[in-house]
Amino acid sequence: MTLKSVLQICIVFAILAGAILYSNQKEQEKEDVAELTKELVVLDKSRVDGLMIETAAGAVVLRKVDGTWKILEPLQLDASAGAIEGVLANLERAHLKKFLLLDEGEETERLTEYGLIPPHVRVIVQVEGSVLDTIDYGNSPLNTYVYVKRASQQRVGMTELYRRTGVDKDLFELREKRALRFEKSAVTSVRITRPSLTIEIARDGDSWRLQQPSEGPADGGQVDSVLSRLSAAFMTSFDDAPASLSSYGLDTPTLQVDVHAQGADGSTSTHTLSVGDVAASGHYAKSESAPYVFTLDSSFVQGMPTSDFRLGPKKLLDFQRKTVDRVEFIYPDRSILCVRDNNAWVAASPPGPIDGNEMEAILFTMEQLEAVAFTEGSQSLRTPSLRVRAWAASEIVADLSLGQVEGDRVHARGSLIERGTLVEKAEADRLMPERIFVGE
Image (cartoon, rainbow, N blue to C red):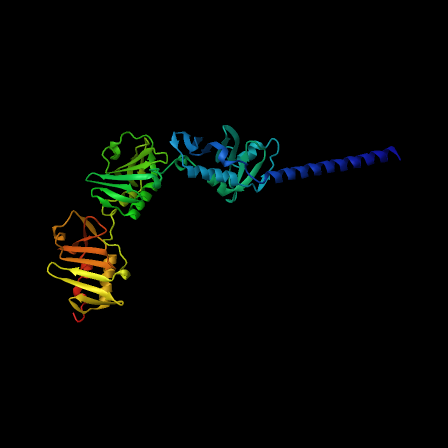
């Protein structure tokens, strides 16, 4: 074999070896890229104790302190646990669809082109006091995917655009916006104070009672509705450096709400909210636990009770009309007694036939009768113009008194409400027994 042939063979082998080496290198790079395309960042959300989120609006620094997220910069504020959970979830669940390799010497140009210098959003994640990684989010070329880069890697990836939206949060979005924070089950009493009225309710075992301006049982459903409205009151704008409270009408508030609560350990707390003047988009307000002034939607103020009537029980009686077997109508000078005999109603005193359907209609009206207003009392109820009592077996299950007519309303008292009430006159008229007699 000649020297020339040997050299040619060596050259061929060298080319083949280079091609194989290049192919193996590319395959390894593909394997590395495939490995890196699974998650944007691997983290355990429960171990994250620090975040820095920088957007066009500025940087927000957050730390978890004793299990609660706090904003440290640019202001020291309570953070929204829900907003932080959303940021962490979008970091944890983001998957990279592809990677773009950066050629040496072109990094700055490419990163600028991808919107990563400067980044649209930068998130620094801290785990147990140490920085885990810095993640930069860039442009979205097709409004579907977005360029993203971790400081710990030289490659640029692409993930869904909504993952960038999920971490693109400014100070307003990250701060706590609930005006009052309490557990409804821990509330022991609530006081609602207006310039001319104070309403107070207190828990009484498993139920509620009115304490001011009247005393008596409260409607648990209405109390729960008020507590839900209070716990769902959200701040809509902020003044973090108010010059004075008087400029917002908060030196003499038009409404103040005090929520008293007791923790499982027996500790007590009071959550106070004051509402002042009307703002351009609601009402100015302030929590006693924070120095800033904020606005609340007008619907919150309008939804607060303006009298104790809303919180009191409305139904005057509580009975099942199907179980009633005797009804007595008592006038000042006479009475009518009706009994159910084999599912048919008859008048026992004075004796005579009656219309059973009309009798059932009276019982239905009694069963559904509700107050339309409370009164401080009526002298006419001491000697009512009509008293209706109903029995089931030997037990009185309903006792209703009707008194003086006042316009289109009638003074009334039922066994469920301890104070005087007013009912619609049209409803009271349906209780008159004259309608039950056949032929009348």
